Image (cartoon, rainbow, N blue to C red):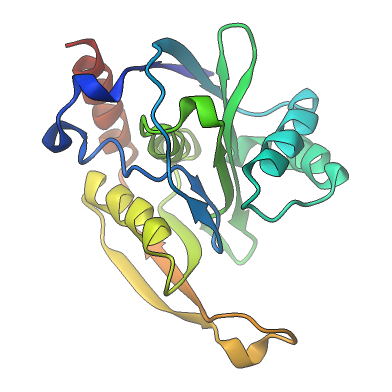
Length: 216
């Protein structure tokens, strides 16, 4: 199963039209996020579950961001094998990896999807692709809740997940999870963002609306 979404020039959309579709910030994990850059070419992007063969490209994309924590290449291969159903990759029609989201269902909370890493290739930034990948996972996994952790100074990451909660008309609760004194090294407190309950049908309606907006 895959979705196909159309990438469009930012100049064609007003800020009001894009408020739900593009948080302007599309490289994110709990600790890091960088600002997006605009790409003015139009091309189709397929969203699908990752395969083991995607693992190397996911590792390379993570490394290229210069922002995300880079795990071992083995980590990404294993993730693509064992957590494919709760992750997503975005590829062009010729197979180039443009973005990914990794996530997993918490063992003690099987209706809660925890988002681990999100990255978008520089050429695809600025079009809300990160939000679309998150929406894809909401629909395809049928998760009831979505979680991630964010430090208090990471306004961009907070905005991305607040935007998701807004799109899905879902409660968004925030609480301290790992305080700074819990870490053996220097680290800011991580705050748990919990969004839900989620309704997958809303994800489908939002995706349809986004595609129609892109074509107008």
